[in-house]
Picture 1: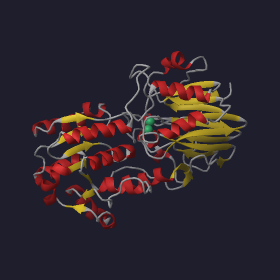
Picture 2: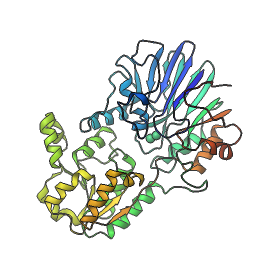
Picture 3: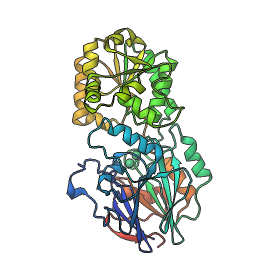
Picture 4: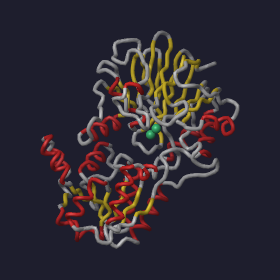
Length: 416
Ligand SMILES: [Zn+2]
Ligand SMILES: [Zn+2]
């Protein structure tokens, strides 16, 4: 089996790996570079047969983050796309609200530890803990060789047990491990991250200190975080307010243990721009599906001291008009780098104008370096190749002599 990393050998973003064996090829992920524009042809990887109907058999998506799926529109309708069922449902849900969000149509479901045959390749997905729901590491076997691609992975989220299970019972006899290293270069080798339980506790503390509405700026697609938010709201006697987008995304998980819009302690507020969007797209079924606990602008001022909202900048005009921001506090619950970008800065400025204090409560979607070391030791590959990292040169010192640094665009042998 031959391997070629198109992008990711020395960067986070635009992950894409091509595999070839016995006259057939397979793609793993087709992501958007972090600062990339999906329509910028100069950043598109050079891959034959993306239209389908060639020796390229399928595109396999490890999870739904844009740095892994954001160029999947380049795959033609004839190329099968393998991805988790919940990942597909969440993509569909998001596409209802987010412009230019591509949803593949010719799909094959991935399921935890269920081998999938694609020509000479056998793909076995391993459900992993990550900030994206329904994320997989992928074992690829072909011609007696075995490659394990971690995708994006961590051990300190709400599904940390999956990480420990992988360490206890790893796939054996791995020729090449393609291991993500998002944390390298960002923090010192011994540092670990807070768990989601610790984030929940931090939210509880912040809610207790907040006289008005708690505005928690988190991604609705970070399902672990929404669970932490729901649990913290419950512990402090607050109602969790979702907008329609979040309600639709949570329903798309298909998981009855994930907070839903019709649960007690949950309310749905549909802001003006979403009401306009529903009218324009005719998706009144979404209002019906999530109408059980619906609240309106006039309900917000009275509810504010007992409310925690899954917040986004676009909700601010509605909250202003409702007059419900007295004593409010905002909590940034995603990567703080976004806050330094122009859009994040604009939000911070608007909050400051309203004298709304801004606190932080976040943990990484990616494994700490100690956890990556445990993972590499458990898998004990013949070769460890860096991917999804800005610091490949740090791998040898951390993970030992099996590390081989490859370059974007170059073919190499899985079992060299
Ligand atoms: Zn990811
Ligand atoms: Zn990623």
